[in-house]
Image 1: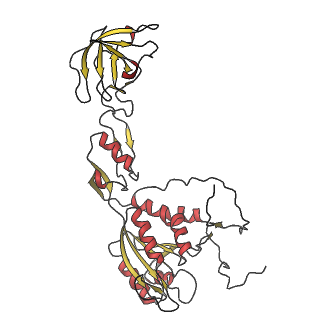
Image 2: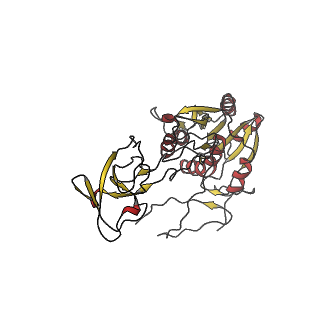
Length: 365
């Protein structure tokens, strides 16, 4: 079938592969360098600015993994029950000061420091008391239920590397080391605006022929999930001076500019021209991706610019595959490789050569 010149996927110029465009632009970016030290309760989703080294072992001392009785393994009969006097009691946070002598047992509880000497703990469910003696069964392994100091984390170990986006489990980890604050990169400041005479703000009337601005709000939510401070510059009408004014506002006090719409070659698409008129530079424009070919990567002075399409599906696809890894780089982190796995499609689909295509599907059992 012949492709008409007004086909939305007809374009005479060369399309840049997505990975090539992202890698090329990534090389031009420098992460924010400002560092803040914040309390643990507000550190989640922030990007760690420095390696975190364990200043103490976890656990910090040998301890019991169960409620039971701490004994010397060599005191146990391997074939019959063993009876030992119980000479003390140790609970979590209350160590036994005295060294334990051979031929005795100590009552211990989960997490309690192991008394000096014993090397094995038998679960209380397997034992019984006879007066002041405990009856211990045969068949236990040496060192059973004995957790050693540093078994989870050795002192001096790098537990978190700079650039990591902190998760709740990381907060718990550093708290277990006794830290109450963490050094993080300051939040990335992102200027965001949409373009289009037909675009209206949700909650306001939409005359015939107009649409509501889904893109800007979806992008703001995506940016917020990445820990960015979003400067909402609203909707710029389809006039070169209006788009230029939005760009002028965006370069003041922001680390990144993200726009939606106005990136095609139509007479009413002004973002590319406004960027160049403002002295900006385009490093990539039009990518080999569907949906989302009209994507621009450039900068105005020192401020990077990412121009995304106007189609709502295309804007989310290109945000995830193009903008997100670059934003993480600027914020001081890195996008982990995606986890890919094959699935069988219950439909036929023909893909064009030399273009990466994303298709919306529902995964079924």
